[in-house]
Image 1 (cartoon, one colour):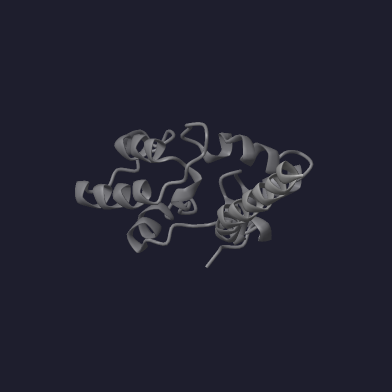
Image 2 (image 1 turned 60 degrees about the horizontal axis):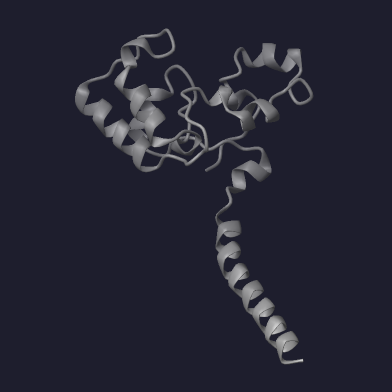
Length: 147
């Protein structure tokens, strides 16, 4: 009988501790994912420099290592020359690295991430939608922007 009461008490304690651990994580979940909105860079310098060619993606979409690698090779940024002054490059890299996400796999292209492919497969993206967007990297053609 005592073992049963202890087990119930420990179970309740475990559930309560789990709730205290999980609840904050649930509250921190990105509202943008639920609404279909994308998260763009909030740093004005990053937004200005990166949005000339594509949406200024929010830093959470890649790991710090990936952002460092991208920022170190701006002269060949996926086939384009995206070089900026060194001071500007360092400021942007600092913002991206500090606010980087923590996905499991390292990669340099957001569009190659497993979650991205799953959410943008043929069931979700028609050929007409892709043609209208011009590129899979033109997120704002289909998604609203998280403010």
